[in-house]
Length: 168
Image (tube, rainbow, N blue to C red; front, side, top):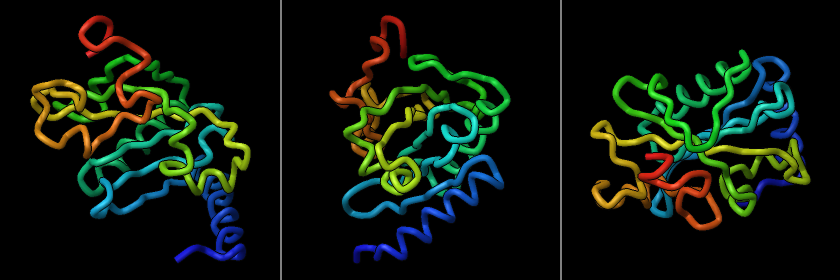
């Protein structure tokens, strides 16, 4: 079922209100037979000039925690460079940042386009390794991990660094 123009305008105002009140809005999309669940921010760029962020495929509640920690820390001045591993978001599960290709914006930041109609915002993906330290692109990653946590670059592989050379 497609939203009406009135629904879209109500959502736009809700996103703006959340951004004004809390610094950003958080949008959660449930997983289904076509893909994993994901969570993304809307308003971090508008309020703090930090890229919007998306997290795909984490268990219930963990994506929210990661987006919240990212925006809170970025708002305080910390910058998360693509290719840099961040070990202190979760105990025992490293996170790495990758730029999101704009071609993925409609699918993974759809409602953000109500706030940024021209798609003129930067976005990053926060990719989480397994507790054993495997990343989705590594051959020793669990079967289906790359499908559950796809990398949102043009190629579908890390592009801001070379795995095993200057990144994990």
